[in-house]
Image 1 (cartoon, rainbow, N blue to C red):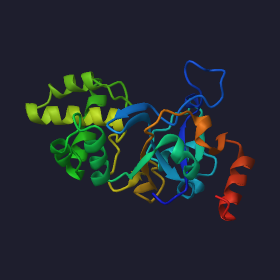
Image 2: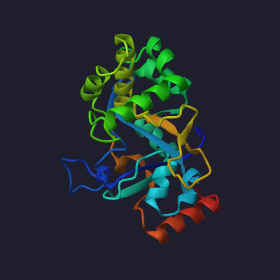
Image 3: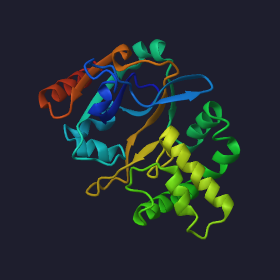
Image 4: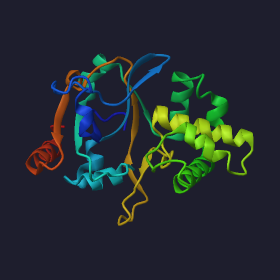
Length: 249
């Protein structure tokens, strides 16, 4: 995945423009800002175009393959970035979405928040399953409003109602802070692939995924986006597919 020149970022349309610059096209960023030890810039998750090509123009299918909860009330876009051109502009640091590599990223960029002593315990299949279980229970018991919530304060209140000891509660609360800051949510798999949320698919896993951290503050316009479009424009999607097949991407 790290050798893929063209990275695809699937996100809500609202991110195309900065909240204070609604009239300025591409004034938004690839993701929320994060400040680490090596810089400050957007943090986001991406895949390569070939990983989601079979999703056609259906934002629901693409969302599910990327392990994202689809919201029919939202509009989505796909940004394909030329990493060779954007690297000098953003100083992007990219790592595979595995337990090991994301742990190393967290230990390096946010050592005070997520030290190795924490990730050695929390970044395992067993602990991930426990986090997913308690996140779902917090939603079901109405401490969290929905499955998208990252409200650590409310999650801590839920944890006090369980039979978990203080150490376990603290670990789970910190895991939600990691979910909020880095983005590895309750459906994170830890093997470099997303969880496939399409119930009709025989595949348990979806796309290969990469965690990216731009160590310089940039906007979409400056990142040499190869294509930027609203999903649903079939002709443009087919044009992109043809370019990929012909070796132009």
